[in-house]
Length: 255
Image (cartoon, rainbow, N blue to C red; front, side):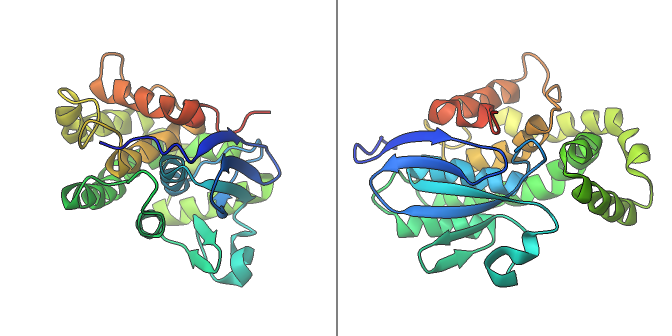
């Protein structure tokens, strides 16, 4: 079981348009670059995975917002996507790699894993989310994502999505009702676990929870908040995840 490290005390806040900060007594400050909407909303699921991991590890961090047009400027053009994390001289760009780095670099902070089994479960869920959950979520959230973006990002997003799917994003959005049904069916493996357990692996939240949570948080932060039905054990678990760390995930961009 993971226990709170008394050396760290977390006080978090976010701000739109400027770097956001999680100030924690003890330790150094790390930086994470996050794709951000016009109202300060952090809407990348992969960024949310890292945000939850940073909170879990009780680390100082600041969030620097970027948009599609400025991603290429991160760390002198070394990356084409977010998240990107800088910790001193270390710079990493893959969300799972970042989480594994945090676990290795900060062994005295609460662990993201409970043995090798939970590490493998997290890696499995990474693939499960990318292949099974992200495709329907991308359709369900497409118009909301477009609408929260900066105007310059809207044009880029529309062009890329329409090139990829061969239709307008408005036509894509018409498929949302069917994709909701597909999503709920594909959540069955998680539901089977969460019907009997509060967390995916063990008695406390760990990286497997944050990996799966981040996919659904993606939809929630852009304003699609009815994909999980009342009475669904996945919905109850999602709410528990949002309540973690003083409810940090419930208000990603307060004004």
